[in-house]
Image (cartoon, rainbow, N blue to C red; front, side, top):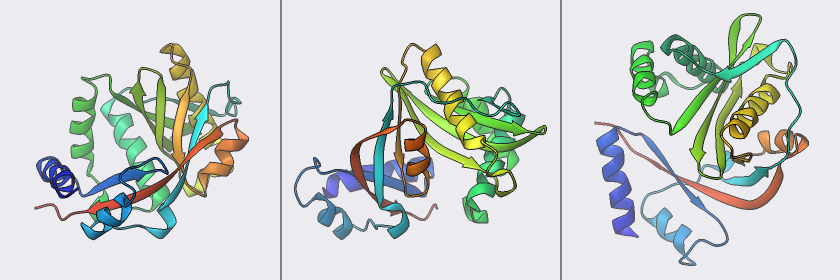
Length: 208
C-alpha cells in the first residue's frame, strides 16, 4: 500500500496535481484497504464520501429548446466553459486556472481523443460545463454544473443529452457516472440506474 501511495504522489508531483481521488467499493481488496489508505495520509470528505455508481443505456429526455449543449470547439469556448464551472462550484482562487493556462490546456487536450468538454449556452452565454472520458464501452461523465443564475432551466439535462448523443455517435451508447447526493436523484429521474456504491478518499498535496 505504501508503494501504491508513493507512486501516485510521484505522479501528482510531476503533473503538479493538488488532489487525487481513490475510489473504493465493497469489492475493493484487501479488506482493510480504506484503513490503510487513511493511515497513509488520505482523508475522507464527509459531503463527498458516499457516491452512487449510475449507468444509463436508454435514451434520456432532450434538453429544452432554448439551451444549446455541445462539445466546445475552440480555446475561447473551453475557457468560458471552465469559468462557468468555477462559478457553479464557487471554487477558491487557488484552485482556478487563468485563461492563458486553460487555453494551453485546450490545445494539449485537442490532440488526443481521450476526453471531451461540453458547454451549455443560454441566451448566448455559457452557463454550464460538463466532461466525459472516452472508453471502448461508453462515456464516463464528470463535472456537470450550472451557474446559479441559470439553474432550473434544464441546463444539466441538456448536458446529459449532449453526452448521450456523443456516446451514440461513437457507437458506444452508454453513460456511467459517480454521483453524490445532489446529482444522483436528478440523474435517476433521467433514467440512470444504480449499479454499485463508491466510497471516495482524497489525497491533497501542496504543489511546489
